[in-house]
Image 1 (cartoon, rainbow over the protein chains, first blue to last red):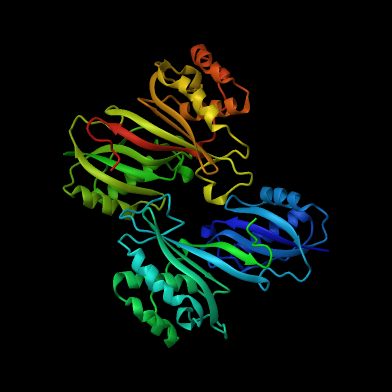
Image 2 (cartoon, each protein chain N blue to C red; image 1 turned 30 degrees about the horizontal axis):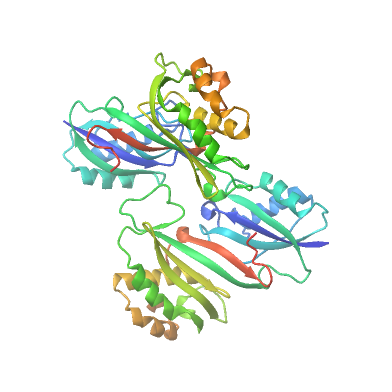
Length: 251
Length: 251
């Protein structure tokens, strides 16, 4: 029995998120089917996180155990023949038996893209939130610094998430302009349900003047979801990097 | 009656090309339906070119006549509500009665993107030709210079095209590297059926050593399609600019 770490990339538009569900096509179910064909055995995969419906991944890591003797490179090649065009296998490597894609993960980096052009752009439709107004990226970036640190982020957690412990360590938040896109980057040791999308919605509220730049510490302290901004739509969100001890799972 | 020049952008993946057809969804049919709803009258549009199935347009121009008094800006806004996500109206302006999107057109610029990464990339799947080998962009660029000029391009015209006059004036061809993409740009006063895709396939043959760099003038002189390279797939092709006297139709 070998434990393998597989890195994949996908456009999430056509999927009901990562996690397997009854009566819905998910990235996990498609990957398990393709792995079963590749390895000729039933495979259960364990992902590094549950991404929501419509969210993308530049780098997504998962592990599984197999009895197959096919070399790692061969698995990547065969898998890419069974996977649809919007999911690709990038890398496969052997890992120790106690490695776990979720529990061994040291942190993740998400990027959120907002397209601010006045007219919608078909080339960016499924990869950006179209917000056709000006955004003050410098102001948003200054406000974002209040989010960095080990804090209780319950105010940035969607109700319905049943997490007991809402303390997370946010190691990096920044907002930059790339042409007519505003890009929000958030790295943390872990994320609450909808956390990045609520951070983005809150920073957009800051740019709109609905929330003052220095109000963020009090919003976090309040642990009150209703004081933060809207939940930005899923299409702009992309899991960009996944960090592990010793290897970063990024191929 | 007003004649209007409309500029649109689209991802061609879901369409059977520009031109209206029976039993197939085309960009023209979708646009005519959206215009009919916007202007509350039957509209026939005249496009600047027939793009093939799967080909994209960053800038596509068309004209039509309307009795409607709705201002140009309002037409763009309303149209974008009726159009699907993969087609967007960018600009609308009044033009003289003798303007014609195709016959008044002075030239067009196409760009063709080849993704040369070893593993396929879902983020580029519908916008690039995935050719997972090295390309020598400098060699291709040198070979491409032989194509520039007013010449008979029958060797670069798909059989089945029923054009009598196969002389066109190619004003620019270049090949550049952008990260792990090779981009071929071709501008001309007009294009034959599949001409850009055959030019790209021929330049890839040059990089592969199947056609020598200095063989291109003789291939063109031969007027023999079988001496040129393959027809590159449609997904990498994008109509980028459309030129008119006085205005360039690019918004």
